[in-house]
Amino acid sequence: MFWKKNKKGTWRRRLDQTNGKGLVVVAPMADVTDNAFREILAKYSVPDLSYTEFVSADGLAHPKGKKRLLRDLEYTKFQQKASPIIGQIFSGQPENMKSGAALIQRLGFDGVDINTGCPSRTINKQICGAELIKLEHRELAGQLIQACRAGAPRLDLAVKTRLGWASIDMSWIQFLLEQKLDVLTIHLRTRKEMSKVPAHWELMTEIREMRDKISPGTILLGNGDINTKQEAYDKIAEHGIDGVMIGRGIFKNPLLFDADREPSISERYRLLKEHIELFEANFGPTGRNLKEFGKRIKSFYLMKKFLKVYVNGFDGAKEIRNELMQINDPQALLVRVAQLSDSV
Image (cartoon, rainbow, N blue to C red; front, side):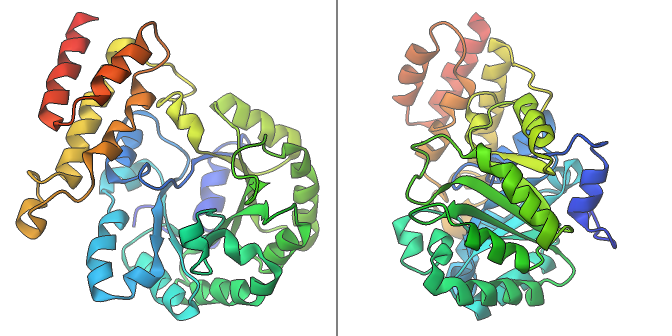
């Protein structure tokens, strides 16, 4: 492990290294923050900490599921040297949460995060994600936190959540703070609101004051509607919090963690080409996966969703994206991207 936990812990050490500016962290996003994209970030736009996609601890507890899901927990030494990397898991079963956290620790991650904010109905039906916010599941939520702590005692324990289920519920935030977490990240919307309303940043100072009273040692991050690094620093200063997590903002500028630097058009094409190559090496049928699986690990369509990350912000970008979306062969797409790059 590159970022070894000491008495302060990984997050606290990293926070100290920001010289009072606060942490700006990339959010865990399914089918986004995979091994390929994290490699791009580690090379060109390094966040203060990075996350894996969220992974089912229940699936990791079964041999067949574990074999498949371990792919989502892969990372390179290069990524970890660039910034600490956090493994995010979810479960409604304490015993599986404990074993999943223990696996995260064995794999050399710098921290473990419990997802209690995912709004997906499929996840919620498993008494996971945002379902745990409900009052009737609060005891289970506490058990899951304790199980995770027991499974990975050497790692910082973080929780990512929302403000409530159907309405804002400060008792849920209070409950989480009472668990004396190392880190708490709050997506400032309820599960019902999804991302349909502006994030409730007006509540962040109140939450920080609650943190100061109940668990001053807990590092507190806010999440929602932050599109630039400067916006993140402004929110940190305004509310006195420790950091901000950025999710969808990365789709507007893939280099935002590099001091909000806007890539040129040619650089956007170069980044896209490199990302396609990394995606195919990790998840395509002709890479190192062929011998074991003989087929794709991830649909190439998931790579094409990144077209809006790289091909945007310049005249004609929409038309070019539409053209590229029609290309379903990775090699053909690489050829076309190279042609576009040469034409700039």
